[in-house]
Image 1 (tube, rainbow, N blue to C red):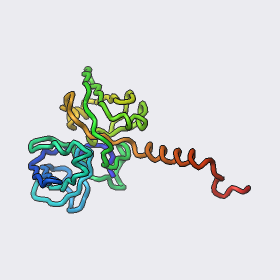
Image 2 (image 1 turned 90 degrees about the vertical axis):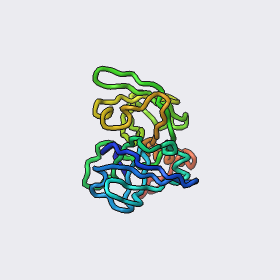
Image 3 (image 1 turned 30 degrees about the vertical axis):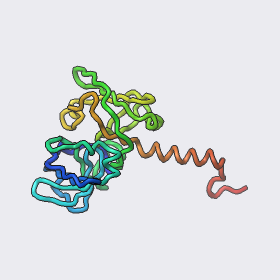
Image 4 (image 1 turned 30 degrees about the horizontal axis):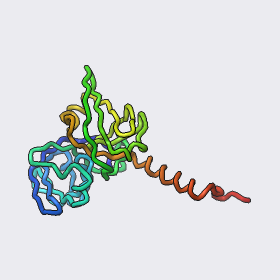
Length: 209
């Protein structure tokens, strides 16, 4: 579980192609302070497991399913990536509940700079539109953001200088692919409501006829 607050920008040190998988080695500092084998680290919003540690690098195995569903398929040595360690119970939830399970890949559709912030439009698959609302939460490349305007096939977010400087979203250009994860609470509510509509109202727990 993560919060979408990026701790540092790591650098891809090596990508080993294994046909139906890759071994991804990333150079980092902060996320390695207390990371051990088997720990979870979010890489551009994808929850990966530490399989090896060697000095200032760590390695993870990225399976076919992840390559098919995320932008990690196109990652190359030298690329910068957003990194966040799994949250612990004694930490502040500065963003929102993020699982690290990417729902779809979106595309940067446009950027509108301003003096103190930048509005970024992201195109998304239409099936994600029902989970987004104005002022709701969305995770883009592992970054917890607030939706400014939610459309049927795109949404906008407003990036403050801190986000522009400390995450990959500061350099993503129109046409670049980004990992998207919608608010898991919205998905749970949708399923519960669908079940209630299908089965009809039921008596509350403890209610007598």
